Amino acid sequence: MDPDTARARAQAAFRKEEQAREGAKAWLEYEAESRATQEKTARLRALRLAKEAADKGASKKPRAR
Image (cartoon, rainbow, N blue to C red; front, top):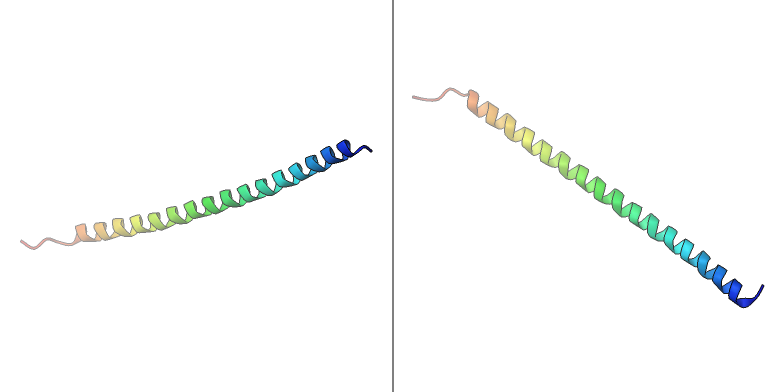
């Protein structure tokens, strides 16, 4: 095998490994962002439901005249 062919194969293998590492890193970032969005949505939903319950409870109290 001549040195140029060996070098080309080594570079191709390196690029393939690097692409795999970058893909794994991108996937982890995607999952972390997705998890953060789900947690934020759950927190905001809980706040909204608590506010709606408080508003509903306040509207049922009889008003003093």
